[in-house]
Image (cartoon, rainbow, N blue to C red; front, side):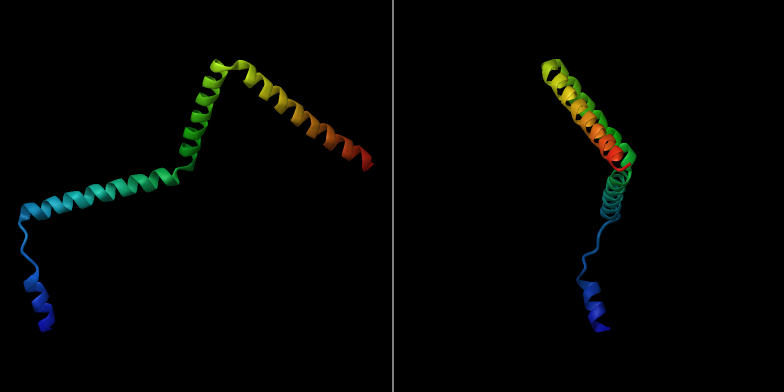
Length: 95
């Protein structure tokens, strides 16, 4: 018990304004932490932000070089068409 009283005596007394300031800082830090957690857990909102960023990148790329975007689009259509044709061909073989 004497150990506890020694520890209490070694802690300097703090003024009410210092304690209020510490409480306000702690509240602010807690609010920032909760905001960060809320942002991380809001997956639909984060996905929406990500999609908006990709759309903006595509708009910029289309403005800068439309031929590249058209080439990529044609290539994507060709690949998807090839996949569909392959699936149809394989399903007909199985009959």
